[in-house]
Image 1 (tube, one colour):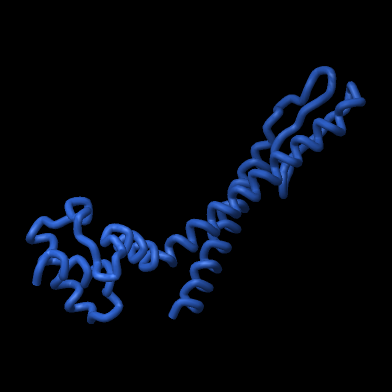
Image 2: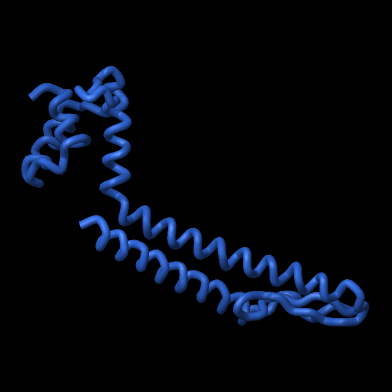
Length: 155
C-alpha cells in the first residue's frame, strides 16, 4: 500500500478495518518511519487534510479519557471557586467587626482570620486535608460518571 493509503487506513477509515489489520498497518507505518507531520501535502479524496482527519480521529478514539479529564477538572474548579467565595464572604462579614474571628472553607473550614491578635494558626489543617481529599474523590467520581456516560452514548 502507498503511504497515503496506510495513513488513511489508520487515521481516517479505522472503523472499517479489523483490529489485526490496523495493527499491521501501524507496524508498517512505524517501519517506514512515516509521521503525520511529514505528510502535510497528503489530502484525502474528500478534500479534508489528513492531519485534521488524524487529529479528529485521535480525539474520537480518546473521548473516554477526555470525558474523564473534563469532569475531573471542572469539579476541581468548582471546589476551588466555592472555597474562594467562602473566603470572600468571610472577609465581608469581618468588615465592620474589629475583634471578630471568622472561618472559611467548603465543605469544611480550612482557614481563619480576624481579631486584634489574630488566630493562633490561620490554617486549619484537618479542614484543609479533608477539603482536598473530598475534592479529589468527588472529582474522580464525576469524571468516572462522565466516562461511563460517554461509553454508553457512543457504543
